[in-house]
Image 1 (cartoon, rainbow, N blue to C red):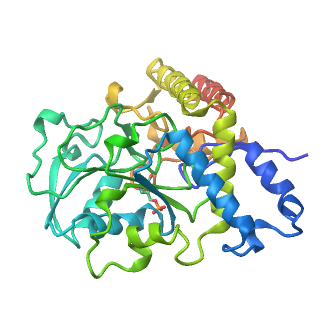
Image 2: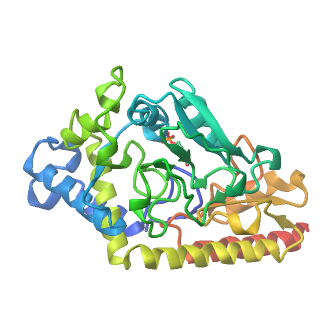
Image 3: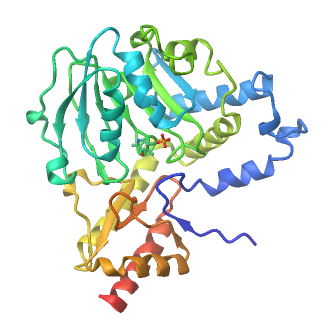
Length: 360
Ligand SMILES: *Cc1c(COP(=O)(O)O)cnc(C)c1O
């Protein structure tokens, strides 16, 4: 008997069990072809069918408009920190960036290699516990685009609204994509590493308005050139085939589960329960302003940080894995991505209640 534990890892994160079971069942022999997906040519008609089905399902889930390219690339979100300015500056020397946390800061630092970054607003002075009011944002009229991080995976800060700007909106959706429906037409470009809410590490999704492509800086490597990648149907070179296949299984699982509306409902319930529990206790705390709390990543602290280690050890003894906060901030963090069930959240809260009674 396989004994799976509750996994709250921030990434690479939990995958849906039915997806892992299907991959296991098909591992040695994919649909009677006598070989695994890992062993297929990416140019074979079998793999091309897998790839096209994954793209079609993703387009359906997110209602991606036809004038948007959907790219399956490599290099993680971190490679897109460079690819975005290389592709989207289009001759401009400036870009707007919003600073709402650790991932925003990394995107900004990388963009500074390529352009003059205008930090529109920063929440650093409140230790990233809130989102700066749009009325205070200082955008630059000459900026080629505005980049932001809709969900800060480390700080647990999420936008539950869309920024309204006149330049193309670029979003690092690594830890929030597919958690709820979004209006893709409001974005110039969306990117997301797969290992949080899409599939295994090694794959990265880019969804881009085609009219913005085709003007990359002349020094852009072809593996980072969105137009070149789109022309090559994301098969300029060998793509991460197994990760692409697994992402496709995740998209099928999401469709069978009622799509993103249903997923949003479940995610909202999971997050609301956990925040409600934390707020109702004097022992646990969450520093983020209530209207900007992330549905996907819930950081929390104990009243006495000296108990952190004991908390994590006992949690693990109770089959609750990967609850340590990011190494840069400490404390705890429970990531509640799509594949994390309400049952897992209830098991966590029950452990937290018991821990508080024994140590509080
Ligand atoms: C995880 C994460 C990244 C980094 O992703 P890599 O795949 O490791 O490059 C970037 N941005 C956000 C918001 C993330 O959650």
